[in-house]
Image (tube, one colour):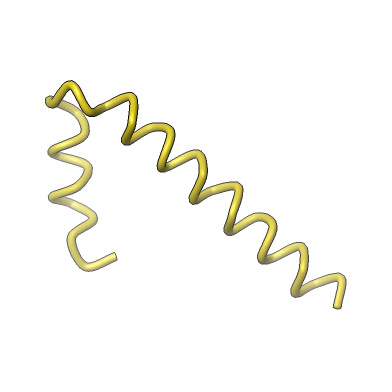
Length: 41
């Protein structure tokens, strides 16, 4: 989380943007699942 600005800047320009978006989606799903787990517990 420390280098979020650098990551966003890198993601926008490099050909790894697709991988970056996939990672971002995975992170979002992971956080959503974690929150759901915490709130249903």
